[in-house]
Length: 70
Image (cartoon, rainbow, N blue to C red):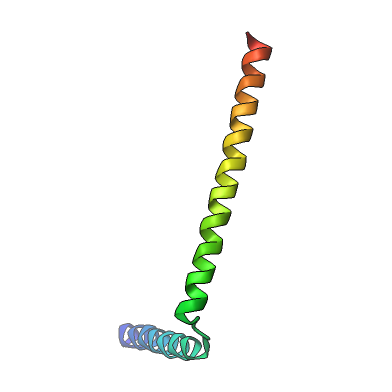
Protein backbone atom coordinates (compact mmCIF):
# COMPACT_ATOMS: atom_id res chain seq x y z
CA UNK A 1 0.00 0.00 0.00
CA UNK A 2 2.89 2.32 0.74
CA UNK A 3 4.14 1.79 -2.82
CA UNK A 4 0.82 3.02 -4.21
CA UNK A 5 0.95 6.16 -2.05
CA UNK A 6 4.52 6.95 -3.12
CA UNK A 7 3.68 6.30 -6.77
CA UNK A 8 0.57 8.51 -6.49
CA UNK A 9 2.59 11.33 -4.95
CA UNK A 10 5.19 11.12 -7.72
CA UNK A 11 2.50 11.17 -10.40
CA UNK A 12 0.86 14.17 -8.74
CA UNK A 13 4.20 16.00 -8.65
CA UNK A 14 4.79 15.32 -12.33
CA UNK A 15 1.28 16.45 -13.26
CA UNK A 16 1.62 19.60 -11.17
CA UNK A 17 5.04 20.34 -12.69
CA UNK A 18 3.63 19.89 -16.21
CA UNK A 19 0.64 22.18 -15.51
CA UNK A 20 2.90 24.85 -14.03
CA UNK A 21 5.32 24.59 -16.95
CA UNK A 22 2.55 25.02 -19.52
CA UNK A 23 1.14 27.92 -17.48
CA UNK A 24 4.51 29.69 -17.46
CA UNK A 25 5.02 29.14 -21.19
CA UNK A 26 1.67 30.81 -21.86
CA UNK A 27 2.94 33.94 -20.05
CA UNK A 28 6.04 34.20 -22.24
CA UNK A 29 6.10 37.02 -24.79
CA UNK A 30 7.80 35.41 -27.76
CA UNK A 31 9.85 37.72 -30.01
CA UNK A 32 8.71 38.50 -33.51
CA UNK A 33 10.91 37.21 -36.35
CA UNK A 34 12.26 40.74 -36.82
CA UNK A 35 13.20 41.04 -33.13
CA UNK A 36 14.75 37.57 -33.14
CA UNK A 37 16.90 38.40 -36.17
CA UNK A 38 18.02 41.72 -34.60
CA UNK A 39 18.99 39.98 -31.36
CA UNK A 40 20.78 37.23 -33.29
CA UNK A 41 22.88 39.84 -35.11
CA UNK A 42 23.76 41.49 -31.78
CA UNK A 43 24.89 38.14 -30.34
CA UNK A 44 27.03 37.40 -33.41
CA UNK A 45 28.67 40.84 -33.24
CA UNK A 46 29.42 40.45 -29.52
CA UNK A 47 30.93 36.99 -30.14
CA UNK A 48 33.19 38.35 -32.90
CA UNK A 49 34.31 41.32 -30.79
CA UNK A 50 35.00 39.16 -27.73
CA UNK A 51 36.87 36.64 -29.89
CA UNK A 52 39.05 39.41 -31.28
CA UNK A 53 39.74 40.83 -27.80
CA UNK A 54 40.60 37.43 -26.35
CA UNK A 55 42.71 36.53 -29.38
CA UNK A 56 44.61 39.80 -29.08
CA UNK A 57 45.19 39.30 -25.36
CA UNK A 58 46.36 35.74 -26.00
CA UNK A 59 48.81 36.98 -28.62
CA UNK A 60 50.15 39.73 -26.33
CA UNK A 61 50.55 37.44 -23.33
CA UNK A 62 52.19 34.73 -25.47
CA UNK A 63 54.75 37.24 -26.71
CA UNK A 64 55.25 38.62 -23.20
CA UNK A 65 55.83 35.18 -21.67
CA UNK A 66 58.16 34.22 -24.54
CA UNK A 67 60.14 37.43 -23.96
CA UNK A 68 60.36 36.80 -20.18
CA UNK A 69 61.33 33.13 -20.51
CA UNK A 70 63.50 33.42 -23.61
